[in-house]
Length: 350
Ligand SMILES: NC(=O)c1ccc[n+]([C@@H]2O[C@H](COP(=O)([O-])OP(=O)(O)OC[C@H]3O[C@@H](n4cnc5c(N)ncnc54)[C@H](O)[C@@H]3O)[C@@H](O)[C@H]2O)c1
Ligand SMILES: N[C@@H](CCO)C(=O)O
Image 1 (cartoon, rainbow, N blue to C red):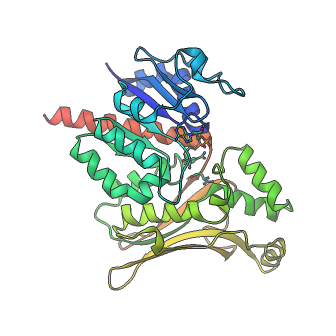
Image 2 (tube, helix red, strand yellow):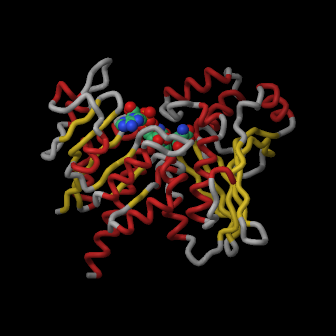
């Protein structure tokens, strides 16, 4: 039976949860999916790096995280050594889950590039490399005969990108609109329930929904990246970040929320893209007070939903978790499952 060796780049909420899933469900995954997973390297800004080709002892690694604790005391190094670990470790697959940088995607873009150049497949939940350098990195993966998967970059583990690519074949997609950020949706809901804006953000951080800098969620940068990913991956829009207009929810006041409620409306942060008659695509993100009978008005908490406008089916809506450690770790697992399925198909056809 195949065993895939995995390197985790970033050992925060998402990759730690993936490690826990591998530790607790490894046997079940092996029997149900026909492959095993073994973690052979971990790097993290705070912990340093650990490379153990025979398999990292997860019972030790998962306990680390106290102040000043690093891998140096456990056979590793206090430095991340990302380039050397990524290029030289024995992993087949690199799971990249470091901070999303909405400006240029770095250093995650380099992490992904080093992996693909050295013949390793990559799955990532990091929106930066996918939104800002997705086409280039997908081409690099193809050149090197490896995979670049990123289902968790949009709507965490809820299948959207692969599902739309596979199941909408034969349909023409004319656009989409959706709630694509769990934190801001959670915050708007808590404010509607009377909670203070900053207290609501703190709750979203504690629940593991928010970005390292929650301004990315609140000011719409996160949705801007997700709209860019969906527009380029599914509408073939060929647009750049500057083409996606952005406005976040920081301008929505408690009074705006109360007024909307009196008028039978609810504020939502909406990301959308639509095809114009000349074939170009217009995209943006902004807060909108939706009427309560709108399909997206009832989407609450960290749940996300996206409604695709298709030529033959009309609107098709996908809804599910949009953030959360377990939900996003599952996205990485689904990427690995997709890579295994592609590999199995190639061997069957050989
Ligand atoms: N948490 C979610 O709900 C969710 C959902 C979808 C996508 N994402 C994305 O997944 C990624 C990880 O999210 P998370 O919730 O685990 O974040 P997190 O902040 O909990 O963890 C990120 C980890 O990466 C480490 N890191 C940062 N820069 C690094 C570097 N250069 N080298 C090595 N390690 C580095 C940090 O020390 C931290 O431990 C982010 O890009 C986020 O946008 C998160
Ligand atoms: N911070 C993001 C994580 C998912 O990308 C959110 O709240 O939706």
